[in-house]
Image 1 (cartoon, rainbow, N blue to C red):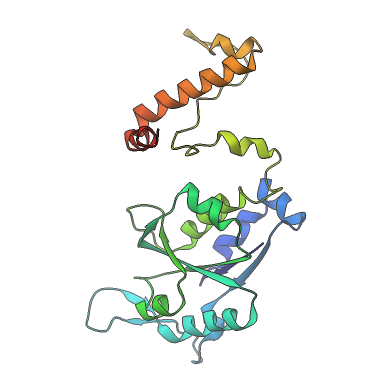
Image 2: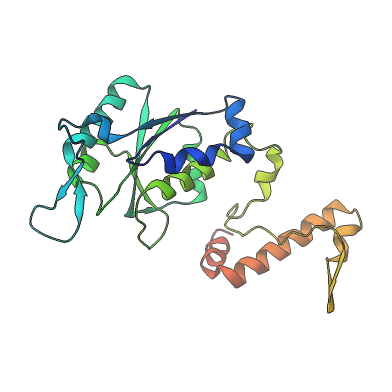
Length: 233
C-alpha cells in the first residue's frame, strides 16, 4: 500500500514515521510513502502558491494552477491514486472509513494551508473529502496523519497482534472495555482494585464482563453510539 502527501510543509509529516509501530511496518515494506510539494509545480520564479480570494475576504487561498499541476502529475504517473482532501466541511472520518480505505492501493492526502484550497481543484480531483472534527487547524497535515495512522492500523501485518483489532473502540458501535495492567492493587491513599474476575482465568466470564463494561462505558460517554447499538439489535 502507498500513501502520498501533497503538502507545502512535508517536514511536518515525515518525522511521524520514524519511530514505533509505523517505523517497523515501513521497514518491512508493508507500506510506502511519497511527498509532493506544490511549490515544485509552480510556473513563477518565486514559487508562489497562494493569492487573495476573488470577491474579497480575509486571508490567502491556495492557487489553482500549482495544486492542479501537482495532482495531475500524480494522476498521470502514479498507479490508481485515491485523492482525499482534508477540510473542516468534509464528512466526519470514522473507524468504518479507516477499515474500508485500508484496502486501497494508493491514497493521496491533499493538505490545505492558509484559508484553504480553491474549490475548482476539489471538484476536479477529490474522490473523498474528510474532516476530523468541528474545529479549524492551520493546515491539513495533522488530519492527514490522523487518517493515515487509523488506516494503517487495519493493514495486515502493521500491528504486532492482529487480535488487538477485535476489541477496538467503535467495533459493533461500542467503546472498548476498560483495560488494566499489573499490579492488581494500586494503593494511593486508598486502594484501587482491578475487577477480580480478570484474575480467575475463566475466559468466557472475562469476555462477558468486558462486554458489560463496554456497554456501560458507551452508555455513559457516548450515548449517541449506545443508541445506534441498541437500534441495530
